[in-house]
Amino acid sequence: MDHDLVRAISHWESSGNKYALYINKWKMDQFKNLTLDEAVLVAEKMVEEGYTVDVGLMGINSNNIERFNMSVKEAYDPCVNVHLGGHILYENMQFAAEKGKSGDDLLKTALSLYNTGTTTFGFKNGYVDRVWKIYSASTEYKANQAGIDIPWGNETNLIEIKREKPTWKVNSRHE
Image (cartoon, rainbow, N blue to C red; front, top):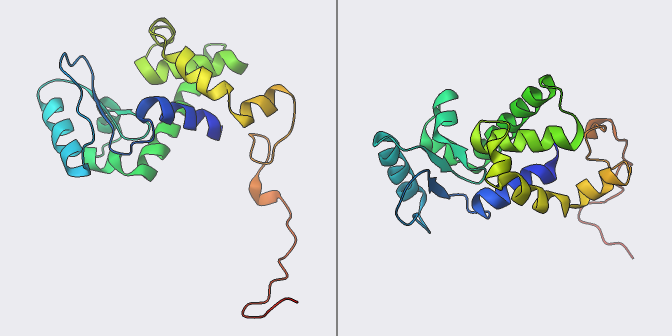
């Protein structure tokens, strides 16, 4: 998975706030600066009332939380949230590939699906353009566009990279 694309989604969805909460189709002001317990309580209450919510760093939608059989509190765990967001993005990329998309079109279609569950509405509402702007400013995207092979890119397995063994000596001084 392209780390910078995941970061771009997270930046747009939550601005790095691990307790972010967005209530979809909510007509009033969104809740800000919630603690974990407050965010879980509000999210669960809103879902009970028929709203869908997006939670955490990656803005995981409550429908996906339910689909993956987890609790709202579990979905707020930053590691779980980012992993789940990456998994959903990967599923969307596979779907876009099956529809004949490739390259940047595949990624943009996957972003539309991530935001709306459709291949088109994420373009219409501006989500794809906003996330793509953040992503395209990233080092990884620029390197890929220039054809530069980077060690954390899709082609390279970090386990296969040979590294020299450190020559450190613990509790000794180097002169």
